[in-house]
Structures are given as structure tokens and as C-alpha cells.
Amino acid sequence: MMILVTPERRLRGFFMSAASTIETASVGAVTPQVARFSEPLPLRCGRTLEGFELVYETYGTLNAERSNAVLVCHALNASHHVAGHYADAPENTGWWDNMIGPGKPVDTRRFFVIGVNNIGGCHGSTGPLSLNPQTGKPWGGDFPLVTVEDWVDAQRRLADRLGIERFAAVMGGSLGAMQALAWSARYPDRLRHSIVIACAPNLSAQNIAFNEVARQAIITDPDFNDGHYRERGAAPKRGLRVARMVGHITYLSDDEMAIKFGRQLKNGRLGYTFDTEFQIESYLRHQGNKFADYFDANTYLRITKALDYFDPAGEHGGDLAAALRPVRAGVLVISFSTDWRFSPERSREIVDALLKNRARVTYAEIDAPHGHDAFLLDDPRYHRLVAAYFDRIGAEAAA
Image (cartoon, rainbow, N blue to C red; front, side):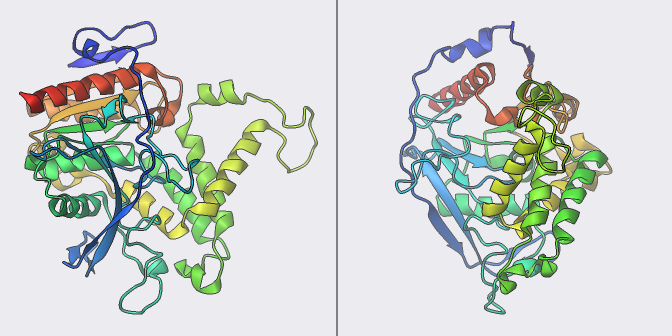
């Protein structure tokens, strides 16, 4: 099923199963949990983690059949904190709180939702900030490079630990969508549906270039110290700020920037200095400063490399259909018209490959002005679409 969703079009037929007005609520206060694994985890880079920890959160209740679990995979700078808030920090709301909760598109009255921080992250799971058991010091720059496939393998072990043999769905946006796609091909019998939002089957040369500029900003920061900056009590914050600024430009569309900022001046007049004069400059610096205060540079380097490395067709001579041949899940692919980083054309490559295999696939392109960040925002057409698809998942489970 292929659908173009525009502001003028109303969702009909298949999508009318979701109410146009839904009363929603937060999942409330949540508590992270830690799963520890002692069995070695082989990595695609050739190295092995002898043991690792995953921090995760859950929302809703796992049913007696353990058939209503939904795994949410996070994108670049997100984490396990997908929905709700922390009791001691009510302002710290989950990054996809508008998507997940009672009455929301992924309704926690029906589904048991799991958010997990991937290995290599900086929010509690084993990563560069963790102690290297061989040295007793933080891993820092010695932590291995990880891939989307490594993350999926680690998530599969968490599913085993929780007694979940088959997910109702695995979903994500951007880098999270790459994980959802990898799940469907890597463990085809472990999920019924895959929700792939704002994704690409691999990065274009331009996208790799943006990532490399961001990495070079970090690596050439005088405080980087080959990734062992914590030993000096410092951090390459200048490089991380620039990296975030470069990345943030790619998340917004030109139209969205024009609407939000245009050529507005910060102080109403030109100052003829190198300080922030335009509102867009002020915005980017603010985003960069905020990001550098909470995110780890070594994690940023590794996550952008994982983005670059993702290429399921690469092991099949460039044949994406061959790479996705194992897929048995139903797949929902969603793109956004102004997303120039992961354009609709790239999503349609995934759809075409799945159709060649006669897979069950639904594709929707949302006409939205927000660029790549649209998958995080409150577009009612987008949310009704996801809600309707999860209605179908719930109906299948009940049948």
C-alpha cells in the first residue's frame, strides 16, 4: 500500500481505524533498569566485549502471552528515556513522549514498550565512559567501533532476558529506523512488524561527508587527547559544539529555517562583528552549547561511524532486495517530503526492494515542512497514521 499524505488529504479507509481526536496522557514517572550480560558479544569490527550492560526503560504491561512488546530503537543523540519523566526531574521528558503513552499512537494501555540505550552510548550502557575491565580505567578512545548490527544483537539478548520471543513491532526513526530494518532481516522470526521512519538503506556520500566534518571538528579539538580527555579532566567541547551545529543544519529543511529564522537579526541591527548577529547563528550556538554539556564526544564519533557503516546491500553485491529477502515481518515505511538528509527517494528504495520479495509493506510519504526532524514532531497526520497501523497490529494479536 502506497499513500501520499498531504495537508489537504484526509486519512481514509485503512487509516480511519484511528480516531481523529484521541485523549492522551503521559506514562508518568519512570525508572531506568540495568541488564548485565556476562556472555561475550562479538562485534563486527573483529573485537569482542567480554561482558556489557544495557540501560533500558519499559512502559505499559507485558501480557500473559508476551506478545504485545514493542522495541523502540533510538537515533543519534537519544537514549533509553523514550517516554514519561523522572520523579526527581519532571522536566526531563522522554524524547518520543508525544508518540508513546496512554491514548497515544503507540498506546501503552495495549502495548509493552521498551526503550534501550545502545552499547557505545553515554547514558549508562557500556560505552566509552565505562571502565575497561582490563585496565580499570574508562575506555575512552579505546572503546571499539560498533555497528547497527552489533546493537541489534545486543538488543536481542535483552529480549531473551525479558522472555520476549517475538516482538509485536520494532520501530525507530532515522538511525533507529536502520535498527528496525536490520531486526527484520537479521532476526526475521523475532518480530511481527517493523516500523521504519525517515530512513535510508545506506548513507549517501554527502551524508558521510557531513559526518566526517563533524568528527574532524572533535578529533582536532586540542582537548581531544586521542579520546582520553577524561584522564585530563577535560572534554573537546569546542569540537563537539561545532559537530552538533553541523548536524543540526541537516535536520531542518530550508523552508523550516526560513520560517523560523529567515534573516532576522538578534539585536535588530548589524554589529559588524564575528559575534552572533543573525537569529539562526544564535540558535545553532545554543544547540551546540547545550549538546556539548551532556553528550560524550567519543560516543558521537562512534554513532556517526555506525551510520556510515550501515549498508545491508553491501554484503550482497549492492542488491538490497537480496539483503532483505529474509524479511517476514509486515513493514511500515514513512518518509517526509522535505527531509533532504534521508529523502523520500531513499525510503522508496527500501519499499521497492521489499516489493521485489513480495513482502508485506505499507509506504506513506508525509508532506511536511520540518525536514528530517519531522519524525519527532507533532504532525497529526503522521501520528494518526502510526496509530492506525498499531491498531492493526493490536487487532492481529487479538485474532
